[in-house]
Image 1 (cartoon, helix red, strand yellow):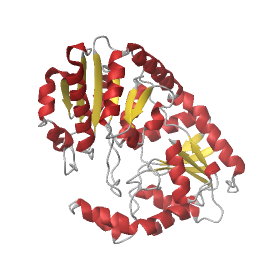
Image 2 (cartoon, rainbow, N blue to C red; image 1 turned 90 degrees about the horizontal axis):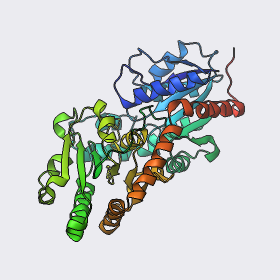
Image 3 (cartoon, rainbow, N blue to C red; image 1 turned 180 degrees about the horizontal axis):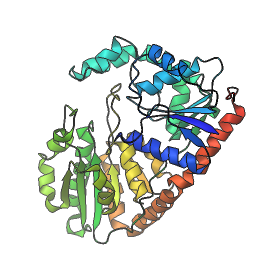
Image 4 (cartoon, rainbow, N blue to C red; image 1 turned 30 degrees about the vertical axis):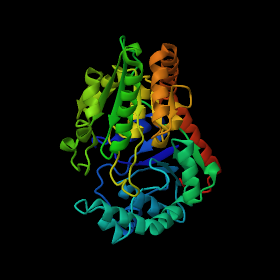
Length: 403
């Protein structure tokens, strides 16, 4: 099978490029010949430009064209639209990284121009995305009708895709993204160490709820509580090229409750992304508070401390998760490698933290399951599952390559 992969790739430093490179390697391991026609291509800014680009190339020897669709990938989106209009073309598939939409941003003037004008107030950019949503949804549905298969990382995301794009559910395959072979070092000795990662766009309130729960727990139990430490890590406005209007970590530092917790709190501001696996491995549990992201402003790719990236980081080194249900990552703990709590429910969070601190067997059981999940999701193990997806798509597709 010959597959053309439409995605940004290294040396682009983005997470999507890294994912695409690992995905290509996994397909190669499964015997699929992967082409990368967009490497070195300048951005295409319209459907007309994409149709001209497609017309200049011979697609007769390509069985499948697979797109990595994520915010900011307009060139990939336009090329897929152009390929979908070919009367005789290859089978089209896609991985959708930000359900429920395919691209997650407006494409039509003047809304696209307003949306990408970063100097405009956030409210105006949100309004442009909202006003463009009927056009965006229509464009997404038109392309979705020509997709023979769609990959999605979660059942919740698949349900949203099926509903918004009116896709038959059987066309959407739920496969978790592969994890790097980072190894699963044993849990560090000593007191319980919690890590909370915060990325650009993180709401302040969930972090305050976490601090309030730990303060309440420490006040209630006093000296009877086993020792613990919370590390607050992530990017600040000073390190962001497009800094958020509100920098939650800097604002959180002024919280009087943090000062009262004293040595229980540690900071790792603006860590190097390459150091994050080591940072995670030196802790026992990742705590992921609720992420209250505004609707319609997903135009930049999530960074290394986004909810999905943070969960994948913890899983890759075999660390359990304590996740807010509203974070959208609740399915990541379905195998018993952690727990969820209702975001905003202080009593439930206090109970979850207390159980974790007072029951060491709970942490051990979570860590065992986390290590098992890490090994099952490493790229070599995911290779056969991805290849199986494409084989099934080809078997039921009516659009085949003409040799």
